[in-house]
Image (tube, one colour):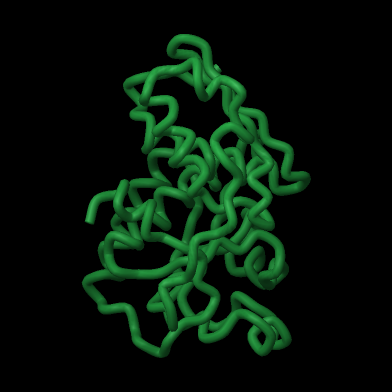
Length: 219
């Protein structure tokens, strides 16, 4: 499965089975993380068979069976949230190609515990990962015209990018972004409150995957 197919198939999954992630897949995930952390100067960490991501109440109410997760963290800097969102999008799609399910969690995880585990790094969220009880369902989506006023005035690659961006997970599924373009210049505006940086990164990655990075430049 390639990333474009994974992008269509990936949906939020909150409930997981007890099936362990095989050692060879854990190794692939860690190799992916090593390259990502080195390239972007991040401190993303994978925890296996660890139940500390959520409080007891959260486990009872909605986070069923989560025992594997990525801590999305790094040294605090101006663009950290956006970079973690961007890299997290790629990480979730890579996990999907390996037959795993994921869930980006931005606000309901055990933040104090995650920051302690991450040794002082700032944590923007976690990504639950494992074998879901279901494959999830598509989120309710805006139309392309609702997120881009330029959708009918741009080349086909732009429409593909918009369609891909609408598949990105965003805070509360609000899709609070607009993407516009002129020639090969593309801009994005996002207003997701405290999740603006992360959502921007998530959406950017998806747009690039759909549009093709070679076709445009962010401005």
